[in-house]
Amino acid sequence: MSTQDQPTEPLRASDEGATNPYAEGTAAGSGSGGTKPPSGAARRRRGLRPWIWAVGAVVVVVGLYFAADAVVRQIAQNTVRDQIEKQLPADVTVKNLDVTIHGFSVIAQLIGGSLDKVDLHSSDVQVDGNRLSGTIVAHGIPLDSTKPVHRIDGSMTIGQAAVNGLVDLPNDTTVTLDHNEVGLKGTGQILGIDVGYTASVSPALKDAKTIVLTPLNVSVTAGGGSLDVTRFAKDLLPSTISICVAQYLPDGVDATGLAISKAEAHVSVGADDIVLDEKNLQTKGSCT
Image (tube, rainbow, N blue to C red):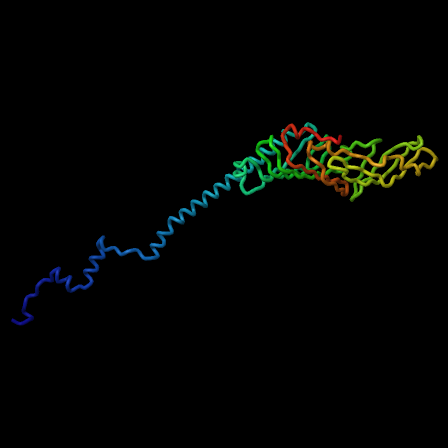
């Protein structure tokens, strides 16, 4: 029988595996036991995933902390404003008081029991009905108001009208303010004659409580008769005029500087280790 006439046998599975070199690899790759290990990049991505979640969580927590701190800061500033307005003397009112609490974290400061730095400012402070503006910077403010504040520094800007309303000078004398100059205008008597006068004076801080005005030039502006009394003009005013600044300030607060500009006087104040509770705020200083 020729080769062409021989019957053809069906191909068996074993023979298929033998004749297909890729069968074993394909079968092995399709089973669970033959899964290829992840590549290096995939392993790195899986390793970074927990760190990404951790960093994201930290960012969220920090954001929530700063948001909470901002809310607490605003509440604390409002509380400080309310407490100050309640503790002021009866003859002092403050409108539009701006309070700024400085420092990285108000929450941390409150936990520590004191505030690092607080700024107070108002352009509408009324003292006996006379308007002025003021700024106070306080350092080391304890939450317990019976304990002393480490340091306060302040400045007041007092207009010419307010100066005349606050300062009590004899014979209805009025004050005029110019750059580094103070002028006085009033009436008096010389040899029994009513006269008007003007004077230029030099202002200076004598100590932490008193401003002293020293007349430099006095001129007679009007007279009641034909008698020339100009040569007696220096007798219209004393050699010095003292103004007690302490009577306008809480006891323990000192005047530290004085400057004169056009129609305004600028007074600097300061104090160390001063208790600023209601009792002390309502107790004025004196020059005696």
